[in-house]
Amino acid sequence: MFALGGLVIACQEDSSTTSASAYLGGEIINPKDRTVYITTTDARAIDTLTLDDRNRFLYKFDSLVPGLYSFRLSAADGLEHQIVLVEPNDSIMLRLNTLEFDESLVYTGKGAKKNNYLINLFLESEQDDKKVLGFSQLSPKAFEAHVDSMKALKLKALKKFSSENTVSKRFINLIETNINYDYYLSKEVYPFVNYSSSERNIIKSLPESFYAYRTDIDYSIQNVRDYFPYYPFLKHHFENLALTEHFKTSNDSILNRKCLGYNLTRLKLIDSLVKNDDMKNQLLINTAIEFISDNKNVKDYDSLLVSFKAKSTDRYHTDYLNNIVASLKVLKPGNKLPKLYVYDIDNNTHTLNQLVKNKPTVMYFWRQSYLRHYQDSHKKIEELKVKYPEINFVALNINETSSQAWKDHLKQYKYPTKSEYLFVDPKKAKQDLAIYPINKVILLDNQGKIINAQTNMFSLHFEKQLLEALNQ
Image 1 (cartoon, one colour):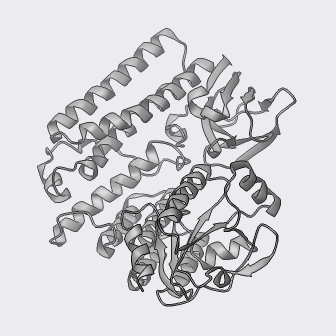
Image 2 (cartoon, one colour; image 1 turned 90 degrees about the vertical axis):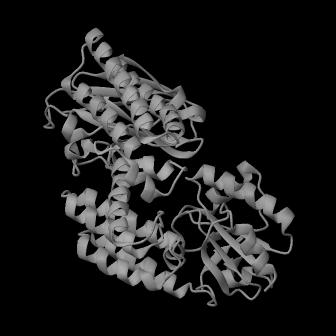
Image 3 (cartoon, rainbow, N blue to C red; image 1 turned 120 degrees about the vertical axis):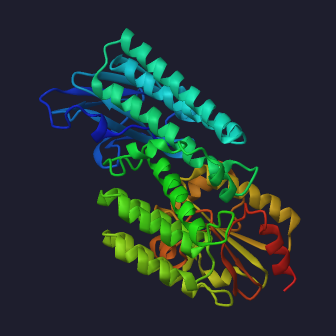
């Protein structure tokens, strides 16, 4: 789930603490646990609350800093969150059903109207994404006409709402910013989702004014990494800029995300344009991890790592990337897996290599907080088991929680437990096996030697890899 867009620094009239207070509370239908987290929008904790016997909570903001906050709780798809605009003297009550998190969310009380507007805009934007994908198959001018119209309708609706209700400049700026960056995002993704031609030809065909808004971009608005659409906009914007630069010095006609030169250009542009260190560092690490996840050529990793280290000021990110690169160098085809231990459902301990059992083996990963991936991956594996009975499929849980919580989760969703295992040391396992993203899969031969340490069961080529493993 994406958090709703909005930019605290740009949208606040005054970010200083006030003497006023405010309240945020509500009722949770079908709670998955008793805990509600109140945080800033960049996930810094403010307080942890416990639902009462009526599944309700209430939090008082003393000496309020007006702006956006987030409430987080366990829902059908794991830990979910949504944002709320809190201003002096608000008393905002929410009601939501965890089975339909965003769709069921409604507010009452003082401050409710503006927040119902925010959630409705968020839901509308999700629907608009599908429309934009359809429009993206049109010519640049026709596409631009459609997204211009969508933007104008949203601004008109905001003007009408503002004339009928008492709202702050903070709220108006917040919605305008959301609308603008959602519009910018649509323009930036156009070359990547138009399927009629190569990206080079699409970019060449764009009207000169297509990206005129780029002169208005603020690259360093603080505390917005988790907001939609600002961060997704920046991601696609730098992809777009880098591809345009890459085409100037290469004969490529299509986007190749595995290309080292293209990704080095992305890092360079982020470093030169983004001045806020937190935002820059997040864009840099995400770009680096994305490249490493896509590119299986270990020789390219060192060049990317050198560029990354010269630009990032985040020591944790640097150490993290160093560790992933070092791990992936060990996980080369032909090598065996590092010696890591797991528990089975009966609390017996095994090494990973003992799980191979003289069969080609697929090892896949999951965690409780990514419920949708857990369900999708297990469903896919059940289908593959039927088609490829000669292959051994092993599920590995990477949660750093108790073994009982793992067992309870398996029992709740009624999947077979015979091939389910829990890492004894999940933190070490995540580092040694470079488990990022969560949907990565490791494919081994019948002797436990690595065939591919970074494949994906949802890839179009995955079943071909299985067949090749069987024929070795």
